[in-house]
Image (tube, rainbow, N blue to C red):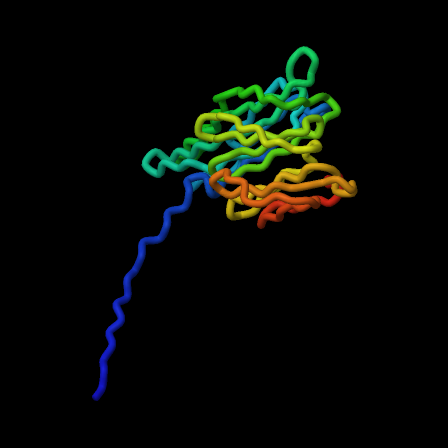
Length: 230
């Protein structure tokens, strides 16, 4: 008895590329880390070159920087993303810490990219900074994790409404790292010190593991530099 098996071949539509997939944004930072300049270059379907630039300023001292994932509107060829700037020397005493959130919008046509960057939110954080401080920041889709080497605690900041949750530590953070699945590790205490510990959070902001040791995470596109682990 023979059995005939038929296989149905289904052709799936190709996923459309993001309108800004041929464009890139570079940043330069001033001496003293008090201002930041963005520049958008690359190509459109008909042209190539640079399409816009501008400053983000003033800051007391930029301690950490992140971009969000992009939000894409294919109907209008618009791409929107957020730029997170952690200022670790705000206020008259330059010891405050503030998260500045900028909205960057790219409207791409056949021949150009119209770029606008505007301040969307400023969030004072219950951390201690300073002009000699170090800032740490990592993120997943739902949360930012932020700390400085002048505060024993760190903060979890919800992206949707910027609500903050204190993360208690026994020593200042020395690193905040993440992996491709949205897990984030906060390392407290020095990497070469006898007293250190870590906490691991999942993509939903839940604490999964903690313990002694100076553990950290790796991701697929940005190296962890051992020289920055103190």
